[in-house]
Amino acid sequence: MKRNAFTLVELIFVIVIIGVLAAVAVPQFKNLKQNAEVKAVIKTTIDTASGAASAAVNQIDLENNNSVELDNLVSVKGKGWNYSSTSDGSYTHVTSTGTVATITLNKTLRTVYYGIDCDNFTDSVSRNKCAEDLNTTLNGAGSLETNATITF
Image (cartoon, rainbow, N blue to C red; front, side, top):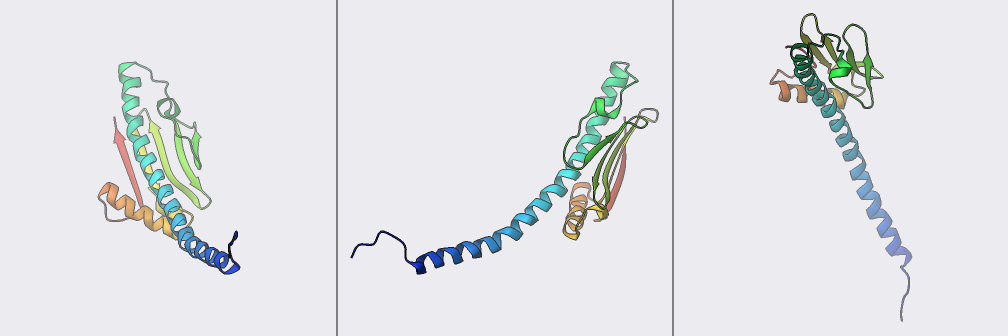
């Protein structure tokens, strides 16, 4: 006897296998997404602050341009990032629970300040991951926040 289709039992087995795989993959995917978001905020904050200091030296000292603002030196775009032109300029990364990261230029003091506050991530997994990543990145004690000033 020749068959041209799958039996009902075979189809049920395939659906059960796909369901098991989905049940395992969805939580893992969510965890990866949270890790990527935390790492992106930390890396963007630190890299932007150091890049802004380097660019400020070029603009202010080498090109005698004292009218630059932070958004002229570096550009940060993405979900949650906002720019404020108060004083010399400031970038902030905001979530529904508050400000996670801040980058501020002060030409008068010749500094770029940055701060990261892990408590303002929206969920506890992201807060814990942020503390771990700050500890690794900054060789700190695993604190939930960091503040630094780069002088140029």
